[in-house]
Image (cartoon, rainbow, N blue to C red):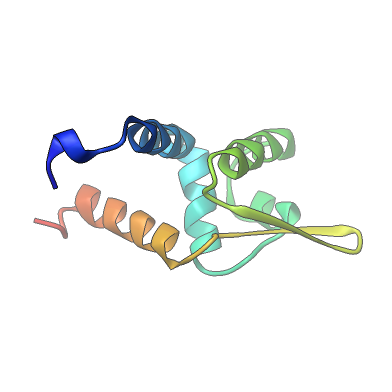
Length: 101
């Protein structure tokens, strides 16, 4: 794909997604959600951050389109929006661990 053919709006979206992932706790949340949907309380059990911080990160991840929010009664569940998000996480981890080389 030629650089001239990339829509500037797509580049802006890519930057928004990368910014959404650019925090350790957010990436940790994405990794947990890679295994399946979870409530904020469940995320607090595995991500070493204050519940208020988890909530803040969940808002950013939702805003970046990296996760989905679903309400069922009193509970809220978060999940990845599709396999492409999971593949992005897998590819990122493969890149940083050297498995992509």
